[in-house]
Image 1 (tube, helix red, strand yellow):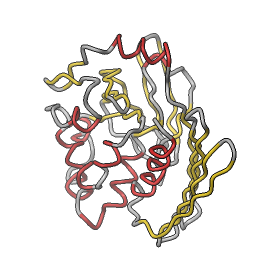
Image 2 (cartoon, one colour):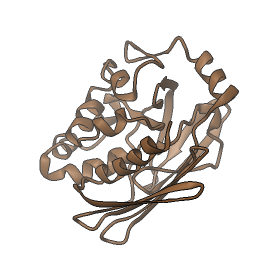
Image 3 (tube, one colour):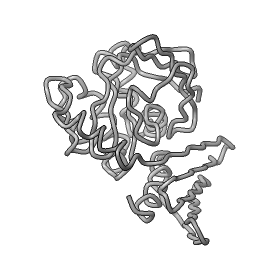
Length: 241
């Protein structure tokens, strides 16, 4: 991925907060490229892209909330091994998720993720999740959304609740491509939303603990897409805010 596209990705983080881009400045220094973007509602995002593709993103909301994430794309033999191991795809919701499609194009074919896809569209996150990434997405099933109190989903997809919906959805996305083998017991993952998830692992079983004490189990792992990887989970994760 070139540095320009990584800079564009950083701009997409501001979109995930439901803001409209107002102004941005870009300065270039010797070994890396820095971009600072400020939205009209006061959301600030800074990204620093090194020549090796490593990206650091920092952000601050108008209310003082902070986000911080670092990602470095896989490459060389490591990437080749991953592509070979997942070349046939993974069956999810009656459809094959394959590495030649992006995360969204794979998700829309899953009969188990119609609620998630509808929510992503309502939050205007389709273009973000179709961008180069890479992203790791923890994808709740329809049954996971059904566990929420009655009427919750219908309320969240209303236009006036777009910011809340975006917060919840981006809490399920982590910068970078993390396969199940990369998830270690006790590991802390910083999400695009800015808060963290805690990994609990016992053998091959991977669970995620959210900011409110809830937990989700990965039921289908390593559905590789061309711009990341999706892990299916059985519970909707909830951020603190």
